[in-house]
Image (tube, rainbow, N blue to C red; front, top):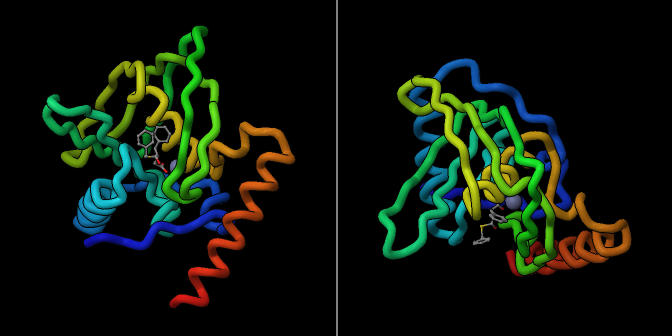
Length: 172
Ligand code: K2U
Ligand code: ZN
């Protein structure tokens, strides 16, 4: 089912998330809900803390039409290697709607994770996949893309989100 996405500032978005001990039916259901929520947003990635679950689980699908969809579920993802080369991308975040800013990250990363069938996977990513997987793993460590910005820009965005939350609370 589609879950509500938390909006910054929210303490759950700043937490260091807990490892997933085992792939239970609840974890499988959570991953399915996260994929459905991500596609509905729409987005190319989503981390469990963004729907209020502070566990180390992310989903992503950076495939572009006419490529087939490639939904990836990563349990306890970890970055094994990052390239020296950097790439800059105009990042956004589903928890910080309508705010974009350029963020520099390693252009390529090698990631290891546990898949839904319990198998351990390892793959190297480049392009939007690399940017997205780093953005999502940051979420698991309580880090948001605005943490890469200067304090004034970060504060301005935070103030805008506080206003948005007040307006949404009034409409509710
Ligand atoms: O984690 C999230 O909030 C979803 C992010 C993932 C993302 C952020 C920056 C760069 C790549 C991925 C996005 O809000 S998903 C929306 C989106 C779609 C296409 C390109 C960039 C962002
Ligand atoms: Zn995000």
